[in-house]
Image 1 (cartoon, rainbow, N blue to C red):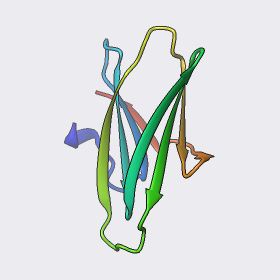
Image 2: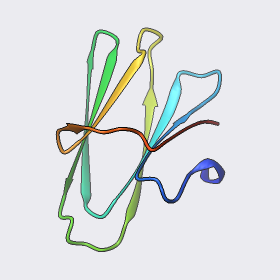
Image 3: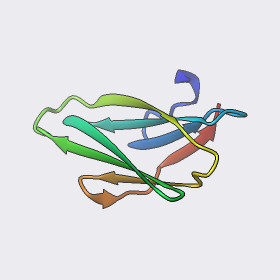
Image 4: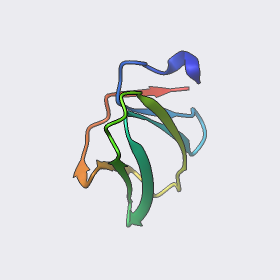
Length: 90
């Protein structure tokens, strides 16, 4: 998985080919808490970042298991929907 990660991207989605599994890679300077909600066909992943005064960028990896009816992933950082910088299959 490390080989396909883009070290310059803040938010990445790595989809495991032929499986209902994806990995979300989020790089930030602060402490991250995560919450997950599902509604109909949408999964909403809420990433909240606090304590951003630390200068060290940390990489956070989250495994996401999808159901067949899920076709939309909405990732929110501090309450705001955010585009994914890099999407790839592994």
